[in-house]
Length: 306
Image (cartoon, rainbow, N blue to C red):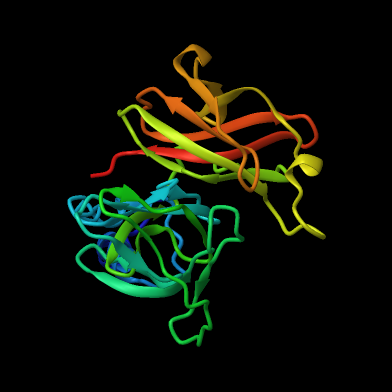
């Protein structure tokens, strides 16, 4: 028996095609909206709830710091997304001394301008506990102490901790000096802070690519009970100074035949001078053995002044 065509079959087929075309158009519109809205929201949102995996792809890298003026060198120049401790070092190539306090700002780069993002504090010295970040509204009480660098020289490194902020480009401001740091980037080196009971006071930054000297004196790293007696608590320094450079997460020894160690007359503790060859830019460690204290060590940096 021949089947009769339903009078509405043709209309039904046309309607299905129309629904299909309409659905495809909706999908296309949704796809276009997703492409446009996604990057726009990522670039414009400065809240800490935004955690892009690759911050350098969201906004252009900020302009560099003017190194002809006093500026900050942040070591390392990047920290992972979860944050970490960094050393902040003032480099002063000018002809006048530059000072700052222990409180400043962490500013965030939005792709066009800098915005104050957090208050920032630092420690007081290389062996002091680090400072950290605070909200812009928090009232802080900090020591009224001046840190800085003489003309044509470096300041002593101080520590702060960068954390609890979204990945992206930031700028540390202390006084009128600035230094860049990337949160969510890959650090160029670890910062293994020294933990020996005694360290060195003196020079902790030398100019890279130039022969230099370290003038060092043994001091307690922490607070001691009673009076510091170098002979009883440290003893005599033995052997030559050992210099190591941080290279891809491990310490590499600088050849000893390129160094010279010269002991000076003790003052408030054992002191000595290390004559260095021209060192490449980076993080270093100096150490010596002592008859009572054992190993004594401290960090130092070789950095460009400008």
